[in-house]
Image: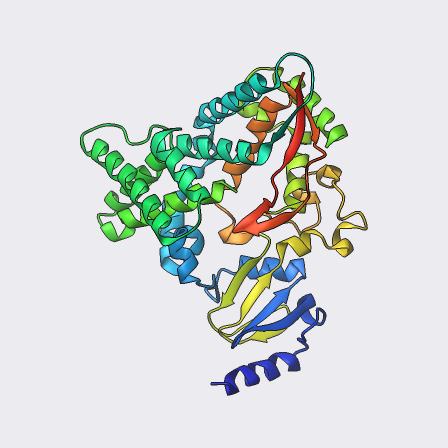
Length: 408
């Protein structure tokens, strides 16, 4: 068995790949046991890897982690991925997200109300760790938009997810979600509307349409498939001063202190620039992996089956040769003309056919939150804040995110 890795290494080295970055695709070769791993830092080649539509690349499989978290569309390949993505797509269309705006606003209104009660009316500063606050906000948004409830089962899922990722917790979460699905399916059978403008209803509706229209149940998803997609959505969603003033003025100019309207959110140029720059500096997933299913040529190198590509999103987003010498600075003006005019090295939600299906949902949630927070509070970093990003599935602040805020 040891001869195969040696032959693979000789073949790849002969094409210019070494253990240090450089050569074809600005890539380097490393090993994870007997598995060759190629770290690709060239954004063009990384996009080629992510855009591949010919079945030559698949997502590496990590069974233990998959079963603990979610075995949904993000971890599937081949025909099953195509089926799940086709059924899920209607639930994430922009017109469907528009119907979820009241739930977004209601959750943000509760957050603002809670902060207002803490800050008081004396005009002073109040210190707050916003990391758990924003986690709770995200949990409430997902609970309402996915399951039609902000409390009970939805909140319990969030609390369990925050605990350790062991098999007992994973089983509890699966049981709760399965119960929600079965309850909704029973209501549909009894003649009630299954949609309720939440993602679970939209998913079940789309799934039944793909099953019934074609007369083949194999074209739809099983209950277990739906459970895994709900888990994936739930966990996937949980993931400065002058610019703050500019964003606040933009929000006040468009909405005043009123709840944001859907059409106005698309005109938030400054807020959108800020969100894109934050996603450049701190992408949720710091690396994306793909694995060759068969021999293929990419970036001038022929790779055999079984090679894993590591696409270091965080590194590419901080490449000074691409973004400039101020690459580590917060400069939203990089996106002044939109993502399409920025360097083609920006993919916080992936790229190609497997771009994160929840991208529009996540950006809409962030925009609604900012449009409701900015007119009511001024904030700055607290002295107790320690900058220590670390990865727990996605990028998190290790010691929280302490800020000072005061009412405006």
